[in-house]
Figure 1 (cartoon, rainbow, N blue to C red):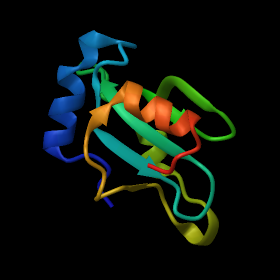
Figure 2 (cartoon, helix red, strand yellow):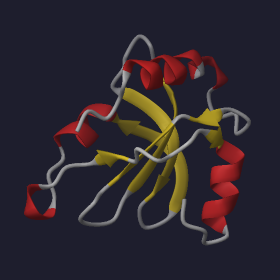
Figure 3 (cartoon, helix red, strand yellow):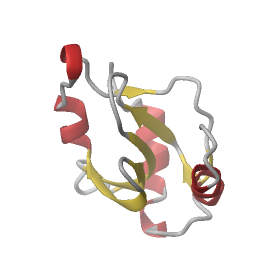
Figure 4 (tube, rainbow, N blue to C red):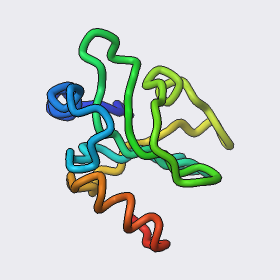
Length: 106
């Protein structure tokens, strides 16, 4: 599965200047279908598209950077890779953060 569409990439790069601002939108959600790991993309560096910033839920819920190429090349159980949640609709990072902290499934 292609993790980024051109529209998602444009939206993420347009927000790059916002850095860690939780008022920006989370524009995509990626997940590991065979294990742990969910990544919520807030922004992406237009000069280095491999550098992404967002909310990551692995063992903890954290804000930080992640590598797009690592997500694209990851193969877990049964050889499955990371997928994009096709039903995810953009929402503010603060909303995502609070819902995850409250134990809600997004």
